[in-house]
Amino acid sequence: MATPVSTAVLKAVPLFASVPEEQLRMLTVVVTRKSVSRSTTVMAGGDATDSLYIVLSGRLKVMMSDSEGKEVILAILGPGEFFGEMGLIDDSPRSASVVAMESCELLSVTKRDFKKCLAENFEMSMAVMRGLVRRLREADRKIGSLALLDVYGRVARLLLDMSETVNGEKVVTKRLPKQDIAKMIGASREMVSRVMKDLQMGGYIEVRGSTIVLRDTIMLPE
Image (tube, rainbow, N blue to C red):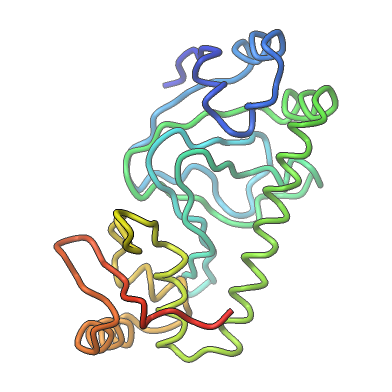
């Protein structure tokens, strides 16, 4: 169910950070907030494009699948990130599906209102462009990893990309099932399990409950 949105909520979203107060008040009328439960498909590949979505809380996976049901995870999105903008810009159908990995709070903006916001706010347009460039760079890195790194290197690269610095240590704090890792790096779940075990035994990572601590020895050359 959609609920009203305050200017305080919008100000906390990076995409709207530079929007003037007056425009923010206008946005509260057109932006809607809704909750989605785990495993909910927010949008499906091939669907008509109608809205932009911004993540307030929770995580979602961007994925594609073939006619045989084989899946690949293109990205995992968290708070502050947005999705669905590409189809709004080029008027093409959704290129991928987005599924909630856990309960999420989302903001949504219709296609018409999104285009109006871009036309009236240069900084917001730049924020969208920076998001597109960032995703293109990430896609280039993934293509390079698939072509140049073995499975060990791909797992290490993914862990490094997913990590954050906590008390001076690089830590993966969000639970990431081995099946999802496999879908992100183009390997089997069994191979991922073997690599994770080898990395742990070799002292490259340390598993503390649902948290993974990365040692300096796992660092890859740029």
